[in-house]
Image (cartoon, rainbow, N blue to C red; front, top):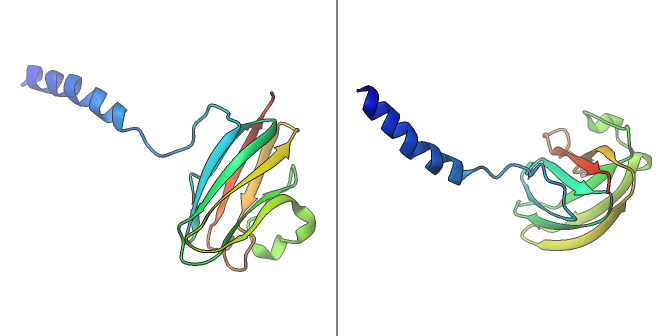
Length: 135
């Protein structure tokens, strides 16, 4: 029985590792992809290199969505705390079923909260983290 368990582990481990997951890559990049659904971002964490990066935004939801990067050091948990002054930059409303590509430029390394700033979306949990790494 012990041999069977050991053999199963040897066979299954590489197969499971090959499947991976759709989570964020810890390796910073100059291009990221985001999928917006009702009401979440997939993945919910992105790693970019400081400077210019390209966002490809897929709205696979049934309603419009945005991708708003908040100012450094700002983190909110409720729409009650939101106002446009805390937004560093954003991809404005994108219709359901569309894909858009836009370039952003963030030069300061750090962690930035990203939200969908449309009414009801943040309160439904639509947020993530953009991690900007030094170039």
